Image (tube, rainbow, N blue to C red; front, side, top):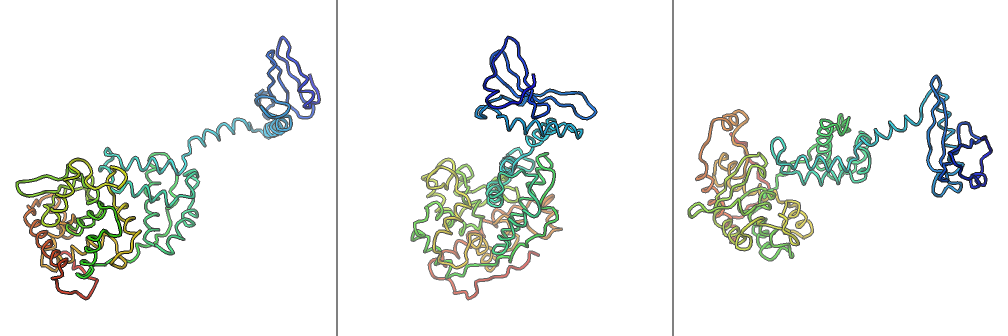
Length: 423
C-alpha cells in the first residue's frame, strides 16, 4: 500500500490479523509497519549500489512525535540512509562502527582515575608511587576544563592553551603539569587507552629558579615562637609536624604520614623507620629521634598509639604535605617567602656549618651519598653503619636548635647559604 502519509493518516491506521506496511509516496524507501497489536514502527528499505536490498527498522512511529519518531524526522532519516546507499555507502553500518569506536574511547576524567589507581597500587612495579595523590590532584587541576573530553582528542594546542597562562606566573608548576600529563599519556598508550601523547614535541617551561632559602637564626626563633603561640589557630597536628621537620630535616610528607608502627623503642632509644614505599628513593631510612624530636613524638604517641600519628582535624586520615601547605598559605607567616622545604634546607646548611660530613648529612635527610661514580659502590658493595654518626649529627643539631630558640646563637646576616658539592 502506497499513500501520502500525514499525521492524520497515521492516526487512522488500524491493526489487522497480520502485519502490513504502508509506504510513503513522498520519501523513497520509507514505510510504516502496523503490527496485529496495533504498534506502529518506521521501516526503511534501501539497496546499496552494487548490493542487495536491505530493510531496517527506524523505531517506534508516533504521529505526534512524542513517544516515538514523528513523520518529518522519519523522512529525514530515511532520506539520509537512501542517499548514502546510492553513493555505495551503508550509513547505518558506519554509525554502528562509530558508536563502537566511541565506546572504546576514554575521557580524560577516567584516564586520570585509572592512572592514579595504577601508580598508587602496591603491586606496581617499583611499588606504590609516594606522590600518587599529589600527581592525581595536579592532573585534575591542569585538565579541569577538559575532563569530559576524549583522551585522544586532547591536542598539542590544548596543552599550550592550558599551561601557557600558568607559566606566565608559575613556570615551575607549568612544567610539572606538562611532565605529569606526558607521563600519564605514555602509560595510557602502553595500556591501550590512548594512541598519541599530546605533550610530545612540546617545549618545556623550565624548572624555574632553584630555591636556596635558608632561615637565619632570628627567623628560626621567630618561626618556632609563632608555632608555640598557636600559629594563628593552625591545626595542632600541622604545628607538631612542622616542628618535627625542623628537628629532623625530613621531608614534610614523610613527617606528616608517620604511622605508629614506624616507631619503636630500642633499649632507651626511640627509632623512626621510614618504610621504602614512603621514601623518595624507595629505600628504608632509620632515624634515631633525639632531644626535642623525641619529646614531640612521645607526646603525640600518648594520643595516637596506633595508626596515623598526625591526622586531619575532621577525620582519621593521615596528614599530607598538601594539608600542611594549605594550612601555611592561609596564615600570615613570620618568615617571608617561606615553604616547608626551607626548613629541610636550613637543617642541612647548619649541620654543614657545624662541620658534620656531607655523607652523614645525606644519611640523615635521605639523600644518596657520594658522586655518581661512588654511588655505584655504595649501592652494590658498601654497607657502612651510619647509625651512630646519624645520631651524633642529630644531637648536635638539636643542641644548636635549642640554642637558637633560646636566643643564644650568634646572629647571621645572610638568609642564603650555598651548599658545597659532595666530594
